[in-house]
Image 1 (tube, rainbow, N blue to C red):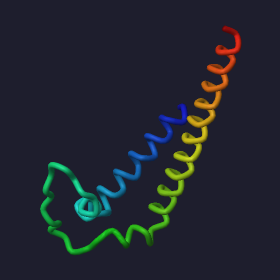
Image 2 (cartoon, helix red, strand yellow; image 1 turned 60 degrees about the horizontal axis):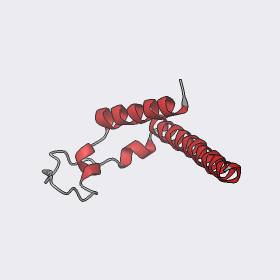
Image 3 (spheres, one colour; image 1 turned 90 degrees about the vertical axis):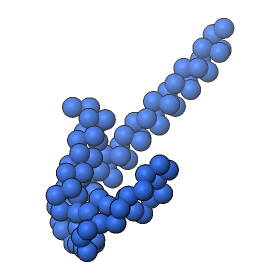
Image 4 (spheres, rainbow, N blue to C red; image 1 turned 180 degrees about the vertical axis):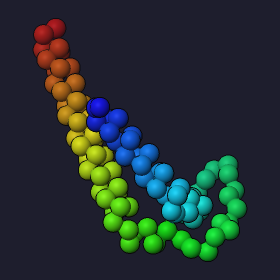
Length: 92
């Protein structure tokens, strides 16, 4: 499994966890959506209790680490691409 697949898998794990134990409407209400007016949640509890769960903390930590690794890999790839472009300029 490559880094993008691992990152995507971790994202799916968080999505499933929040879907099961959290409240997406409370999350989504924090963002301005252009063409969607979401109704208020029918549940009173928010998502703060998720932050008290070790499993959720671990899922978030993994996602952060995977995102950082993916960003580093993409940044390195961009730098290599820029070096190749400079070499090609010199060759011509």
